[in-house]
Image (tube, rainbow, N blue to C red):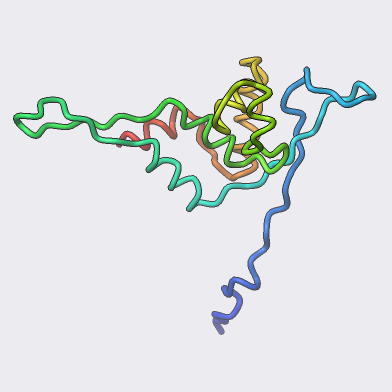
Length: 142
């Protein structure tokens, strides 16, 4: 027998936040690398980011032709959306790095490209995104 009540939201298991050492040059008073708290992004959150990063630009305005352009900052926006702590929206933290957005702050805080790529991969895996960023960008373009 089928029991539809098992599909009710109250029965859905919530994925716990994870902790990740995102930047090896950010350490506590004991010299330990700081752990960042990361949440799993929902399908809706990722979809909203993809939509926000996709726009149609005119190729030839007279003929009404457009092409799809995908914002290359999608990866940074995706990662910033997953960070619970540190608070990337904190004005004092942004000001200390001379930036005005969570994505810019994230790129300043994790300024080692290898570390940023590893962090982005961790965020994607924790959120259940199996394909890499290149595949996500190509999927959004289509």
